Length: 258
Image (cartoon, rainbow, N blue to C red; front, side, top):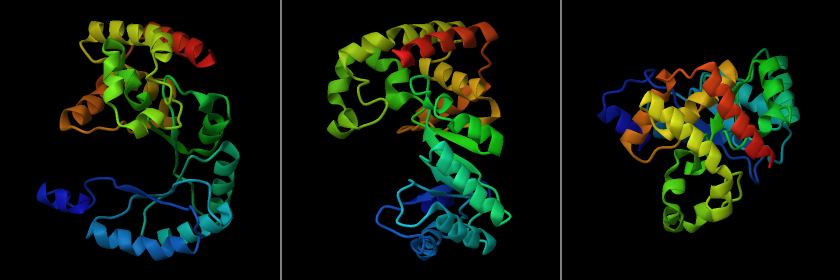
């Protein structure tokens, strides 16, 4: 589907960055080279720019997984190596294993948002900055909570798929009336700043995220409609003032500690 869409849009290989993941559950590292060929075949000429270990739950050691990834990179099947949901220690092990191969760990994809700042406490951020690893923030809008639309209309939560409402994640209690009330001060501040700049609540939240953590963190907000993707991309053009960043940080920190 992806490669067909890109070709229909006349996007040539190399003009986009494509990332994908290997799922390690109930598998060993030996599965990594066996499954990459299927991915490359489906991509039909488009390259894998970033190949990631989806979770740290393989039957094989992190070192074994990194060795197999290194082979793929040397063979030209992938262009860089990443991990996802790795702790600071796991990330360090992966980085060390790749350094032994003369390579570097490019990224670690973890959940980060104004309502999930665990990377500041669990060592992931400090380790990533020291190792030169980019953190890719998934759920940077806390599964929609940081758009403000559930605060404006709490009834929208009842229309969400049951799986999303019950998902175990930092946002799993996001749609309860208690949590909406708890996070309302942050949404109100984001909305106030957004009005001043003529942008949305979510754009302010994304701008804070990629500014606060500097070059270490990039965000990958989800989108189901083209206009959502365009809106998220436009947040990169928003430059918040120091006072605005500090006020948002203060309210966010108070909420995540509560």
